[in-house]
Amino acid sequence: MSFAREANRAIRATLVLWVIAAIIYPFVMIAFGQILLPFAANGSLIKNAQGQVVGSALIGQPFTSDRYFNSRPSTTSYSTADPQKDEARVLQTGVSGASNLAPSNIALLERIRGKDDPDPAKRVEGDLNRLKTAGVQPTADLVYTSGSSLDPHITPEAARAQIGRVARARNLQLNDLETLITQNTDGRFLGIFGEPGVNVLKLNLALDQATSLR
Image (cartoon, rainbow, N blue to C red; front, side, top):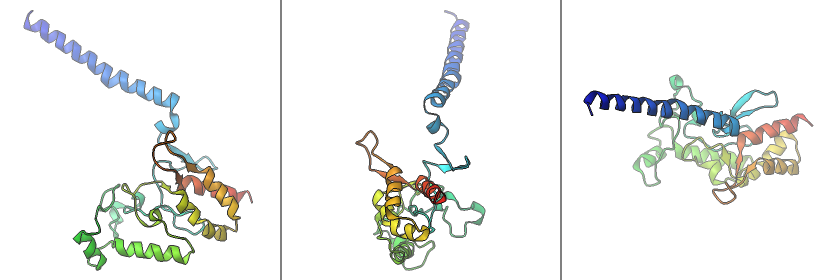
């Protein structure tokens, strides 16, 4: 075969593969997602009672008010800081990620001694005092950050530990809050993988709705 014929075949094969891989396959996957899994394909967006998008089921948000179930602490404040006004340097590790400092790390020891900011040790101590003052029994996920710092879930135990504080702030019955927690607890994937978790945004939206109906 001539060189020209071989080059022509190679070019045609490249174009066919490009059309399949760069056009047909992506559009088939988009159609597949939109038809069978539209919620997940569009970012798992959560809407409030007014139909407004208020967040994603996959990304946490900061909740610290006594009227709401508090979310897990975040080294990046769930990436809500303004990069242009980030005096606390919550975005210094990027939009996602933990400090990755082990208890034996000298950098963490320096922070404990107050030579650097932000000070995670003081933050932990402050959160412990705040929780105890509010009558909340601290759990690990109410004190320590997740690996991504974007975890939207807390454990059912962490949610139940906050029931008394939220009930007092909203004048609600403890049993009503127990029910809301149960309704917004995600079970293990396929019943065997992972651990149950409570999506804090969903729980707080349900809390607002339950309060508005009273």
